[in-house]
Image 1 (cartoon, rainbow, N blue to C red):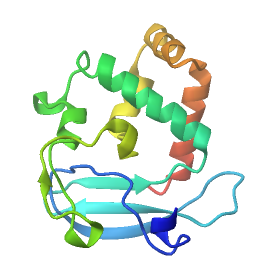
Image 2 (cartoon, one colour):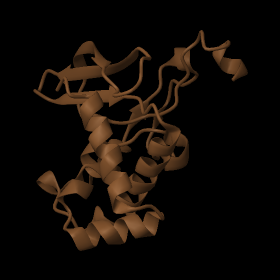
Image 3 (cartoon, rainbow, N blue to C red):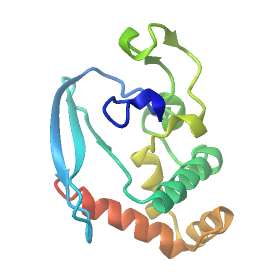
Length: 165
């Protein structure tokens, strides 16, 4: 990417609303089984007691499957599953985003970034796949065009890589 100066400049790839200002950040090492690359995750804490994790997907196929799962869960099941305080997690994350002027922004956007361009996966939404019964899991996986065990294997690998939590 010419804008990234050959990997020397960080580029914004996604925007999300976490609900509060992150006051503490900690860089954590991800231990990906069978991978020797130095992979990092960012653990964030808020003054209100919230905890968040920002981690990268190291496998493009896994990222594609989980993005498809998120879209399917968000479109079909997010309205059927109970939400804390009646808040839709997909709509909540996309509510507000502020981009600093240094990153080419400076305006508050009230419309969400399109999911295809956002690039962020919402763990609380994709992990709800595990809580579905077997028939619902099979139906959602079939709609994605993958096997149920492939999605579960991706979630297990992600859990193993972020086992520091």
